[in-house]
Amino acid sequence: MENVALVVGARGVIGTNLVEHLASLPDWRVVGLSRRGGTDVPGRVRQVAVDLLDPDDTREKLAGLSDVTHVFYVAYQDRPTWAELVPPNLAMLVNVVDAIEPVAHGLRHVSLMQGYKVYGAHLGPFKTPAREDDPPHLPPEFNVDQQQFLTARQQGKSWTWSALRPSVVGGSALGNPMNLAVAIAVYASLSKELGVPLRFPGKPGAYHSLLELTDAGLLAKATVWAATAPAAANQAFNITNGDLFRWSELWPKLGAWFGMEVAPPLQMSLQDAMADKEPAWKQLQATHGLAATSFAEVSSWPFADFVFGWDYDFFADASKSRRAGFHEYVDTEQMFYRIFADLRRQRVIP
Image (tube, rainbow, N blue to C red; front, side, top):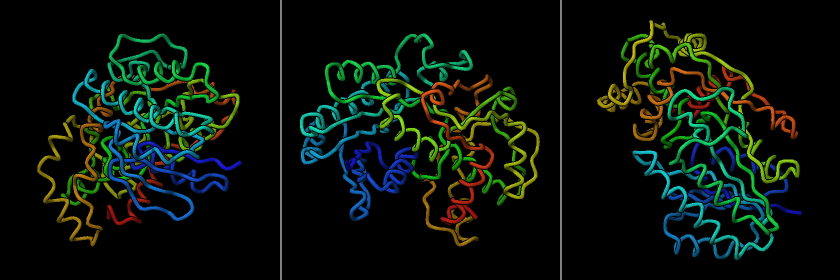
């Protein structure tokens, strides 16, 4: 039986890799939704531009998608405060389900992408390792609201749901507000071009905290697994690379990849430090003959500042997914090297 995936948020760091993975599988066709749309891949991927905050536009654009069997919801809209994140991110999910459920009579699964905000990781030190059955924290939290909506909506229906909870996701997709690997690559490239050593810019305690990340390719495989494995139905799963690290060990290795000296950490806001660096970025592109990637496309500075500010342990227990049948893993150090090499091949960095 052919599967038809509706990937909601197809141009993000998670969605890009998910679309590529699904398109590589022999029994899947893909429809990608995003605000910008994209280029179709004949016979495999169709890209649709849609305003998910507009219920009328969402219904109109999804009206003809009667053959969709799986919805993969990975969309996200940023807002200044935690409370302000709730209305738009909940509304987009509701609009998608309201639009697709009446027309896709063969719908079998709705997959929801979450994160460690469910555990309060964004608020400060939280219980580690975090587990899927940990008690909730005081709202607001849009991830929780989304799961509550999906759980209630699924009652009595033939389709199932799953929720994936990755750590910070590593990938090379550009133009995203939450792309740590790209931020590090651009920060290192500009530091090298300006003749300064690579310094860890986060809080002193963050340099020694115990952390984990999630490779975007690994997450794509886990997402499809959870959407198709009977043992994963109607559950949430932490998805991680499978190893732990400290920046104090990894940072000098990242510097070595760029051929740079690493100086002692110096806390600074990358958002502030990079505010005047667009001319330097353009000069770097001209000097090295790089692609004409805008500075905005590679700027995830607020997110990088956020991650580098975690002066507490940040990891979860992913054994539930292994017990249910998902056994993939990725070496985090090698993940960074692969992403940096991919950015170099794309001529984004020298």
